Length: 312
Image (cartoon, rainbow, N blue to C red):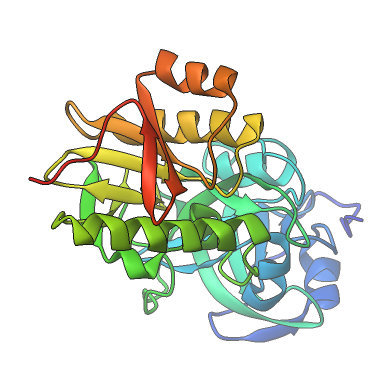
């Protein structure tokens, strides 16, 4: 519902940063939708934006000040990939439409005016992954970079400056967690993820007993807000290993896709899949066709199809 007035006279904006107002009263005076996070007004040259970090996390929204001096605001759309229409489009086009972008802390009842903002000229938004409402499937969301017009920049609470080139970091294997856990840290691990973690631990013990170094590599791709992690990387062998808790076809196909994503960052790297038992012949052929080896545990060690692990 848009509480727009019938006359064409725009009311004068009188609110100052840190002032509070009932959201209902705000819309009665200045128009705009009374529900939702984004409320473009028909009766005043304003787009109202409401941020509620506590409620927003239920929908996969993570809002807050970034290290780049911008307020990062997740667009609207609780299910499926977010698209640039409706409220999202009103934020993106607010300058060309001559509208002021006004940000409020809170979404219901009494809200606090944070000040006037505008989308960043250089990079108005970026795309990121986030879970659907209620912890559903991971989808793509729009995250706007809002620069304050006069409001002081707040302390960073989310994200860093998006990199202009890939950033790499080796991290301990003991910190094993999946990329889904980065996107949705409050979620409990799936059973398959727990199996993968145990499989990785066994493989790590085996590799270390051979005197080989084993780590994970954290990769933050160019222009991305969230990193990807290799399951295993053996630096002296330049070997990438992706672990899966099952030998069913879907798991092997997913591993192949993930390894294809990782190895573009590693010149000349070999790739392998780590699974709990020997896959069917057709799946071994599938991996071989992609130049990917397969490892599985056997008699206190590991058997392989393709490359063999040897001491340095």
